[in-house]
Image (cartoon, rainbow, N blue to C red; front, side):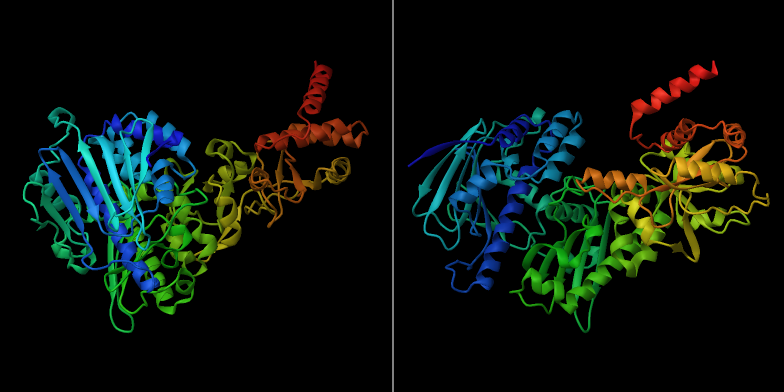
Length: 615
């Protein structure tokens, strides 16, 4: 019995974007459908290894393309894993992925073909691309090992129909009822075997399953159209950049070209071949909780799993590609892989290769490196916390904004080369924004001495700086923590002890100590922490995550040469200092570093009263 179901709202919007697509290269719909068919064949073969009792057919696994010029249809058929009715509704009727609304808003806002293509690719919505070239799409599918299939049909206008098919073959057949050919809109004649052959050769030649073309008018005629040779098994000189780019699109569902391609292999104790890619832009889900990471794992050219997390650490989750190992079991679980010694060795080598590749890019192709770091640097810096073995190699490829240049970030090696005589640490400041840090009182004495300061504004910077104590023998030091010794020969001013003691008592609820500062030149006061204390920015991050951090009292430092402080000293020695002056000074220091006053209204009232007295 036929049943009509409404598309989920987000799916409906996506369909409309596809139907009215401005994307000029509409040929890619076939790449997407063939890629999906290839995945289905991988999965059915894997299912036959995992469970010998499941009734799956694995003889002559292939993709078949059937053109019918008279009916103006193109059918993409595979005898792979297939889908149940529930899976059809879940995978095609809805888009079960967080960030959908944001993605749709981005796609609507994207005013260029390149941006739209990038967003579509990031979301990986291959099936929907059928509606770029078809007015109506039909699909018949049966999950391997089940008795009944299902027929799906839609014009993409908001609803689809489902009905059971008792005698459906295993796998999936998608029939596109093609729109009229339109050269101006780049709609080619996809019912023409020559057009289909050209597209498969361009986009899908490396697919390891046979792709056969069956022109509808020649019943029974099946022509193989792909070479089937795995790219990673071919010598590097045989593979063109375009072939690498198409393979990258296949494994990543990204519509852009990769930024860098890497190949590596090992022979001997354990053998493997790997083909890895760095993307040219940050994947849309890079910082989403349910992001996918890992590369495809094959064993002797047989697909074993997608997104093999055991091969790629979390901080390199953007790396895509294939690892083909020779000596693993085909029936291997993700849990076993985490413990497998060979997998751990391969992982170490993959990580080393990626870091070496980025380092070479940094030294020889600065523009390409700048793109990499702009798009993916935030993720890479997570490795400073999680990958202690490679911490030095990661630090080597990091770039940081600094006071040395308004535009060009610096490496730590370049920073060290510029250090003047007498400077014994690499100084850094952390915070929300570059402008906030540049105007911070904490930088005054460093600027006066001509010392460069790294300006770290990514959330991850707040955490890794506590885990990394030095670089190449030179300590890393925060400008806002601990005592600062900048080698000044000036003697500590005398006569401030009573003021410091009085202010410490008056502000005991807010600060743990009041002391004189050697880091201020023009500001009257600033707040600093002890080494190991949470920074104000880190406290805000904890609160944003719903966690209340322990209250950390900070240290109030006073500039002994500032008129406000010397005036307060005189008033205190004469017994005229009032608590509200201490509170105003503390509030000013808090505001100067971008902090939040506990009671802004009370601060304003006190300030207004003091201004009134001064007039």
